Image (cartoon, rainbow, N blue to C red; front, side, top):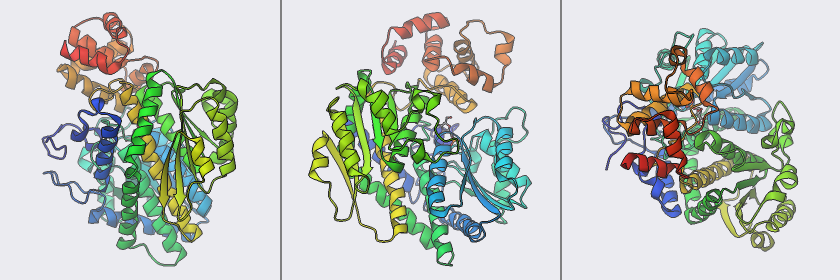
Length: 574
Ligand code: F6P
C-alpha cells in the first residue's frame, strides 16, 4: 500500500494537503465502508509513532506533550493574575470557529478568556491590527494562533507582531505540519512568509519565549479538508492545555507531563466510543445522502453547544463542497442568546442567519418534506419536554427524524423520546460527580458529535457525487491557499505544466479565452475575490485542459452532467 508518510509520497505537498492513501476510493464507498474509512483516518490523530521514513512527531511524542506542558504553565500564570492579562485564540475558517466555541465555553467557566473573531485569511496586516486592538491596555498576553496547514497569512501577521512585542506577548502556534512544510509563498505587501515566521518562533522556543505545537495527524480523508482531522486535533489540543492549566491553577499545583498524557488518552477513548456507533452513523450518512441526492435538505437541531457543533458543521459545507447555504443547516435552542457572540442577534442579516429553534419552526419547518432529514442533537440533561414537543411537530412533516443522544451514567433514554424518532444513536458516558468534571465531559461530548456530523456531511456529499476519489474537485477558490490547491489538482489530473493550469484557471475565473495583461498579473487574492462569484471553476478548467477547448465549450460540456464526479470521470477517461 502507498503510505503517505514515506518521503516520496506527494513530496511537494505538506501533510495537511496530501491525499490520504486509505481513502483513495472513498467516492465509491457505501455508507458503512465510508464510516470505517473515516474511523481509520481519525485513528491517525492518536498515532504514537509514525513508521515511515520522515520521522514526524505525533500527538503523544515527548516533545509535543512537553510543549503543551510549557504552554499550560503559561496559562496557569495568567489565570493566577487575570486583571491585566489575557489569552487570545485566533484562526481562520474552522480553526477560528473552534477557538470561538472554546473561548465562550471556558469563559463561562473562568469568566476570563477572550475571543478573537474570524477574519479574511490572506491579510497579515489585518491580523496584526486586530490583535493590537483586542489587546490594548493588557500587560501580559498569551496568543494562540491556529493555522492547521501552517499557512494563513492572517495568523502569520499576528505571530510576527507578538514576536516584535515579547515584553507583552507569548506567541503559541498550533498546526499540523512540520516547520519545513510551512507555507513559503511570498505574501503580497509583506516581507516574511509563514515559514520564516515559524522558523523565527522555533529559535525563540529554545528560550521558552514562543511555542509551536505541531504534531502530524496525517492527511485528511478528503484531501485538504482541515475541518476534519486537523479541526478535531485543534479542539483536543486547546482543551487539553486549557483544562490542564485550569485544574492546576485551582489546586495550586503545576501541569505535568502525566496530566497532559491522561487527558489525551481520554480523548482517544472518546474516539473509540464514537466509532462504536459506526452502524448508526452509517444510517445517518445514508439518509442525509439520500436527502441531498433528491435536492432536499439536512437539518441539525441541537441544544446548547451541540447546537453550535451543528451550526459549525453546516456552515463548513458551503466552502468545502460548494453547497448552497440551505443544503445543510444548523439550529440552536435559544439562537443568539445561546451563542454569546459580541454582536448579538444577527437574524436580520438574512435567512441563513436565523439559527434559533423558533426560526426553524417559523420559517423552515413549514417547507420540510418527507425527503428531508432532521437530526436532533441533545443530552439527557437538556429539556426533554422541549425536545419531545419539537420532535412531534417535525414528525408531522417528515419521518426522516433522527436523534444523536448523549446519556450519562445509569440514565437511559425514556421510551417516549425514543419512539418519536426513526432511529436513535445513544452514547452512554460514565457518570461524573463534580461540576468541573461534567464540564470536561461536555467538551468530549462535543467532539463525539463533531465526528458524527463530519461523517454525515462529508458522507452525504460523497453520496451526492461531489467528490472524485478523495478530492473535492469543485472547491471554491476563495483565497490564495485554495487557488494553489486548485492549480495543484489541475496539474495532477490534466498532466499539464503548472503555467498552463494557472492560465486555464485565470481564463475560467474571468470567463474569457483571452485574459488581459491586468488579469494575468493581478495578485492571487484578486483572482480569489473574483472566483467567489464563479461556479465549477476547477472542473471547467480541467475540461479545457483535457479537451483543449474554450471556456464556453467546457462549460457546455459540463452542463451535460448533473454529477461532478461523473463529469470528471468522463473527462479523464475520454
Ligand atoms: O479557507 C479555507 C480553509 O481551508 C478552511 O477550510 C479552513 O478552516 C481555513 O482555511 C483555515 O485553514 P488553516 O487552519 O490551515 O489556516
